[in-house]
Image 1 (cartoon, rainbow, N blue to C red):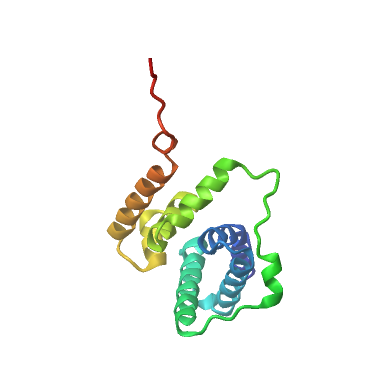
Image 2: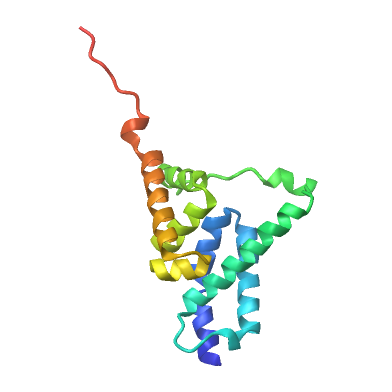
Length: 169
């Protein structure tokens, strides 16, 4: 049992990175990771021998995320007035313009494409593992990944974004 707990603990940084990239809110991402770890520890018997802890945990996280999205659609929006003053994003000196462009481009992707790009491109899951996590066929993952990468190329292509200068005589 302690080996399984250690394997789960080793995946926390990857889970956090994926949750932050998916949700784009650090507090909500931390809550999602916490819920995932709690559910995983409560259901250690559900982890089949030979299964990858990463795939198992990402599947749990995906299911929790989908449940939360469904619940949000059904519940009214509540705004906490005290937090409005702190909601402005703070730019740190170490932030790179390129990183902010990547973040904006990732945010512009549809959720299905963003999930595939993050799971395969960032987290290194195979197509089959990402398909299991998302509950879709591997071909769907490959298609969404291809469309997502193409859209990212379009959004990040600086040559087409810059106006061209003409020489006037």
